[in-house]
Image 1: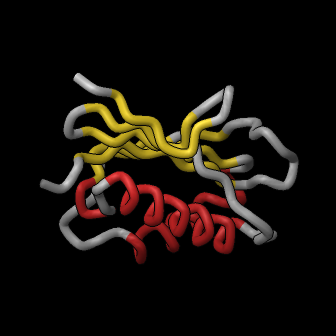
Image 2: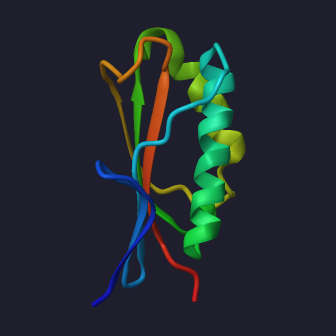
Length: 117
């Protein structure tokens, strides 16, 4: 089977397509300062990458959400996440607290989705 990489650099690809599966690398926010804004930015990036790879949020299989401070940011992230999800299409999900790559990053999300036929 063919493996297709999108938005690659020497260290990673933004998305990898293998058969009917789409694997997104962890998406981080742009300029937003709080968890709600960062979550919206990250989900917009996920929407764009999934569309480019031939999928969408209704075909999510799994999500992993990394929060810098789960006690402070879980509720805000979860509120935005819940509004973004399509009803009846919630993926399996794990949310963990993690030290993220840059100090200003509060939210990072990675997903796996099925491609739309």
